[in-house]
Image 1 (tube, helix red, strand yellow):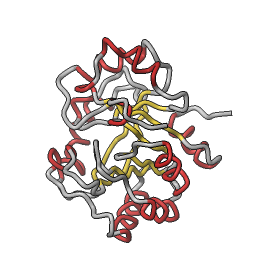
Image 2 (image 1 turned 120 degrees about the vertical axis):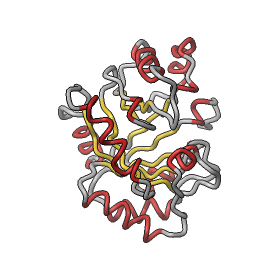
Image 3 (image 1 turned 90 degrees about the vertical axis):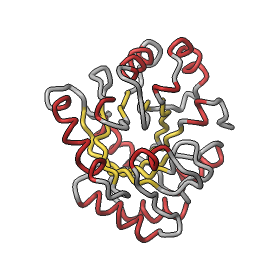
Image 4 (image 1 turned 30 degrees about the horizontal axis):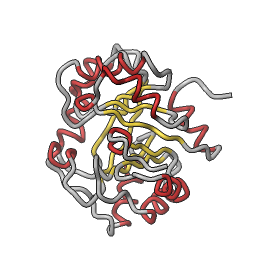
Length: 237
């Protein structure tokens, strides 16, 4: 039987080697009027919904979550670009620290700013180490955070950064190649990080085909996040 919280469920499913597939919805690109069709077109294998973007207009996240709930009962998790994207209408929030960068705004300042909203909320708060990996183009995260992604050939540094996140108490590690990435996080990186960690590993960015998805799962991803390919209807099964 699954346990109470979203994170406990993720941990249990990780231990059972049951892979999770998440659709990432950017509120600024999501048309509420076509929400029903969007969810009808998604594969049945979707297990979670992430909602967030690097920049989102005021109140758009809340409206997007409300629209999603009309057509889906999957867990909705805020994947925030900044603290203004928090909404009580969701089920949980990834409490992100951008471990790959050294900009204090995304290591701790945004987290401090969010506390006023989170301390009295019912959102499940999941501490998450977020590591930006070079996906072959300049990502929105890179532009907004003013940090550089980690290079894919620097596997040891990526593994050590992921472990530093685990050692500092993060409950998830999220390796992200960026929205619309040309190349996804390499299978070698995924394998090596997976071997090092004891917490769930999330992979996102640049995954466009069922073959890529299966390879990323086999390399060790516990959850895969797909945004742009579903958004544009470009995911190839």
